[in-house]
Structures are given as structure tokens and as C-alpha cells.
Amino acid sequence: MEIRSFIKGSVEALHSEKGYLTLEEYHSIGRKRAPNFPADRSEVYALFRVYQRMKSTLGMFDEADIDTACVKYAWLSGTNGYVVAMASRAISLLVAMMEELQVEGFIREDDAQHADTLKVTSSCSAWQRMQILMDRVPLVNILLVQFANLYRT
Image (tube, rainbow, N blue to C red; front, side, top):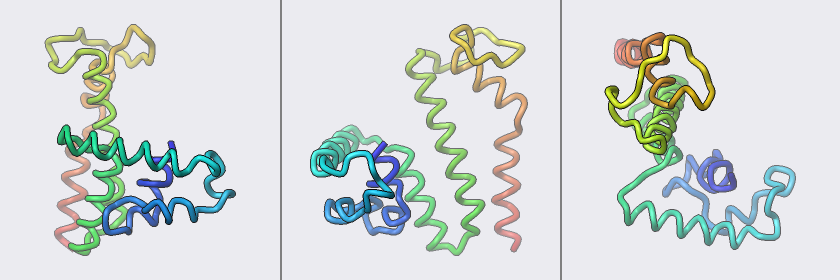
């Protein structure tokens, strides 16, 4: 939570050069704003550094990396920040769904049975929830229309 909310997820982190706070910047966050680990911030930041190294070694990225890249791209290209934020959030949600699919072992459509209704229970897999969502919400079309409108203006 500290990494997502403050070290990589704060406004200051989004606008920083590296996309995350330095140890000094993290320590300077007030207790009212970040009350969870005021005495253990050095240890939390050390865990964050280990996490960053593991990600880098494995060639992986997380939702905060996507958000930072989208914000920097939007700033450089003058894109409407609201649409970029929406697209970034949509991508983050899709990443979370794909992680659920990997955990449940469903990567392809033929690995899971189809469900007619969306049930958020153990009997409805992540693949089934994603399939129903994609069938009912034209997400790709919505994103394409939003980006097309950006380039018209």
C-alpha cells in the first residue's frame, strides 16, 4: 500500500524524473497524509528498492509504471490528461485481470467454460468475468473513439 499510494502513486512521484519518490521525499510526507508507517519508512523504502530491482531483473512492470509512462507521454504530447488518466486506469484494470487469469491458470478462452451471468464467486473464474465484461462493454471501441477524438482537436 505504501508503494502504490505514496512512493510510486503520489502526485509528486508522478511528476518526478524517475516516477517515484526518493527516500528523503518519502520521509518528508506528513503523518496526516501517510499515517501507516511513520517510524518504519526506511524499512519500507528498502523493501521498495528490492521490489524495483526484482522487477528490473525480470523485465517486468507494474500499474504505477504504466501510469507514470502515460502521464509523461501526455505531458510531452499535449494530450488531454483526463482521457489519458481514463485509458491508464483501464489498462491498469486489464493488467489486474490478466494477473488473476495467470493465478487461476486460464490464459486462453478454450481453457474455461462460458458463463451467462456474471457471478463474483469462486464458481466464476477470472477468465469468465473478463469474457462477460468484454462481451457486454465495448471497451476497445470506447478507447479508440476517445483517442480518435483527441487527434481531431
